[in-house]
Length: 126
Image 1 (spheres, rainbow, N blue to C red):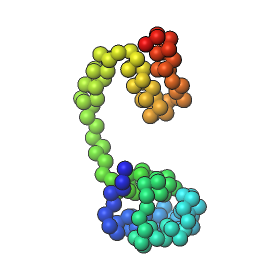
Image 2: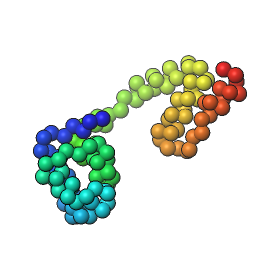
Image 3: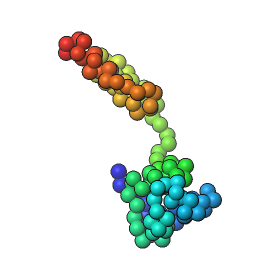
Image 4: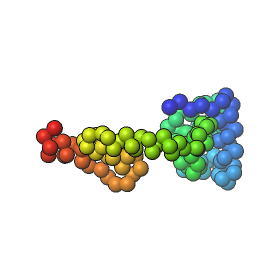
Protein backbone atom coordinates (compact mmCIF):
# COMPACT_ATOMS: atom_id res chain seq x y z
CA UNK A 1 0.00 0.00 0.00
CA UNK A 2 1.50 3.32 -0.97
CA UNK A 3 1.10 6.15 1.48
CA UNK A 4 -1.21 8.89 0.34
CA UNK A 5 0.05 12.07 1.98
CA UNK A 6 0.01 15.23 -0.08
CA UNK A 7 3.26 16.88 -1.04
CA UNK A 8 4.61 18.77 1.97
CA UNK A 9 1.99 17.57 4.45
CA UNK A 10 3.80 14.58 5.88
CA UNK A 11 6.68 16.53 7.40
CA UNK A 12 4.35 19.06 8.98
CA UNK A 13 2.16 16.31 10.37
CA UNK A 14 5.14 14.35 11.71
CA UNK A 15 6.62 17.39 13.43
CA UNK A 16 3.28 18.43 14.88
CA UNK A 17 2.61 14.98 16.31
CA UNK A 18 6.15 14.66 17.65
CA UNK A 19 5.96 18.04 19.40
CA UNK A 20 2.46 17.29 20.70
CA UNK A 21 3.82 14.11 22.30
CA UNK A 22 6.65 16.13 23.87
CA UNK A 23 9.37 14.31 21.96
CA UNK A 24 12.59 15.61 20.49
CA UNK A 25 13.82 14.30 17.15
CA UNK A 26 16.40 12.30 19.07
CA UNK A 27 13.65 10.81 21.27
CA UNK A 28 11.65 9.82 18.22
CA UNK A 29 14.78 8.38 16.60
CA UNK A 30 15.43 6.20 19.64
CA UNK A 31 11.81 5.02 19.84
CA UNK A 32 11.48 4.32 16.12
CA UNK A 33 14.95 3.08 15.22
CA UNK A 34 15.20 5.74 12.51
CA UNK A 35 18.07 8.21 12.66
CA UNK A 36 17.35 11.74 13.83
CA UNK A 37 19.01 12.99 10.62
CA UNK A 38 16.46 11.04 8.56
CA UNK A 39 13.60 12.25 10.77
CA UNK A 40 14.83 15.79 10.10
CA UNK A 41 14.65 15.09 6.35
CA UNK A 42 11.08 13.84 6.68
CA UNK A 43 10.04 16.85 8.76
CA UNK A 44 11.63 19.21 6.22
CA UNK A 45 9.93 17.34 3.37
CA UNK A 46 13.24 16.61 1.67
CA UNK A 47 12.65 12.85 1.85
CA UNK A 48 9.56 10.69 1.49
CA UNK A 49 9.17 7.81 3.95
CA UNK A 50 8.22 4.31 2.89
CA UNK A 51 5.23 2.56 4.44
CA UNK A 52 7.66 0.60 6.61
CA UNK A 53 9.12 3.85 7.98
CA UNK A 54 5.65 5.31 8.54
CA UNK A 55 4.75 2.15 10.43
CA UNK A 56 7.81 2.50 12.68
CA UNK A 57 7.14 6.20 13.28
CA UNK A 58 3.44 5.70 14.00
CA UNK A 59 4.26 2.91 16.47
CA UNK A 60 6.81 5.16 18.20
CA UNK A 61 4.24 7.97 18.38
CA UNK A 62 1.55 5.51 19.51
CA UNK A 63 -0.87 6.54 16.76
CA UNK A 64 -2.55 4.58 13.96
CA UNK A 65 -0.56 4.13 10.76
CA UNK A 66 -3.43 5.68 8.79
CA UNK A 67 -3.32 8.88 10.81
CA UNK A 68 0.35 9.51 10.11
CA UNK A 69 0.14 8.32 6.49
CA UNK A 70 -2.82 10.61 5.81
CA UNK A 71 -5.12 7.79 4.78
CA UNK A 72 -8.82 8.33 5.31
CA UNK A 73 -10.51 5.31 6.78
CA UNK A 74 -14.26 4.88 6.64
CA UNK A 75 -15.09 3.98 10.23
CA UNK A 76 -18.68 2.99 9.46
CA UNK A 77 -18.96 -0.75 9.16
CA UNK A 78 -21.61 -2.44 7.04
CA UNK A 79 -22.97 -4.96 9.53
CA UNK A 80 -25.74 -6.00 7.14
CA UNK A 81 -23.15 -6.96 4.53
CA UNK A 82 -21.14 -8.78 7.18
CA UNK A 83 -24.21 -10.73 8.32
CA UNK A 84 -24.90 -11.64 4.70
CA UNK A 85 -21.35 -12.96 4.34
CA UNK A 86 -21.76 -15.05 7.49
CA UNK A 87 -24.94 -16.58 6.10
CA UNK A 88 -23.13 -17.52 2.88
CA UNK A 89 -20.31 -18.98 4.96
CA UNK A 90 -22.75 -21.40 6.57
CA UNK A 91 -23.41 -22.92 3.15
CA UNK A 92 -19.73 -23.55 2.38
CA UNK A 93 -18.03 -26.94 2.69
CA UNK A 94 -16.58 -27.72 6.13
CA UNK A 95 -13.00 -27.63 4.87
CA UNK A 96 -13.47 -24.06 3.57
CA UNK A 97 -15.04 -23.01 6.88
CA UNK A 98 -12.03 -24.36 8.77
CA UNK A 99 -9.63 -22.40 6.56
CA UNK A 100 -11.64 -19.19 6.95
CA UNK A 101 -11.77 -19.62 10.73
CA UNK A 102 -8.00 -20.14 10.79
CA UNK A 103 -7.46 -16.95 8.78
CA UNK A 104 -9.74 -14.99 11.12
CA UNK A 105 -8.01 -16.40 14.21
CA UNK A 106 -4.60 -15.42 12.86
CA UNK A 107 -5.84 -11.99 11.83
CA UNK A 108 -7.28 -11.12 15.24
CA UNK A 109 -4.49 -12.88 17.07
CA UNK A 110 -6.69 -15.08 19.23
CA UNK A 111 -4.13 -17.81 19.40
CA UNK A 112 -1.19 -19.31 17.62
CA UNK A 113 -2.96 -21.37 15.03
CA UNK A 114 -1.48 -24.55 13.73
CA UNK A 115 -2.87 -25.60 10.43
CA UNK A 116 -6.05 -27.27 11.57
CA UNK A 117 -7.30 -27.25 8.01
CA UNK A 118 -4.41 -29.34 6.77
CA UNK A 119 -4.79 -31.80 9.65
CA UNK A 120 -8.53 -32.06 8.96
CA UNK A 121 -7.93 -32.64 5.26
CA UNK A 122 -5.47 -35.43 6.04
CA UNK A 123 -7.83 -37.06 8.51
CA UNK A 124 -10.78 -37.02 6.11
CA UNK A 125 -8.72 -38.04 3.05
CA UNK A 126 -9.97 -35.16 0.88
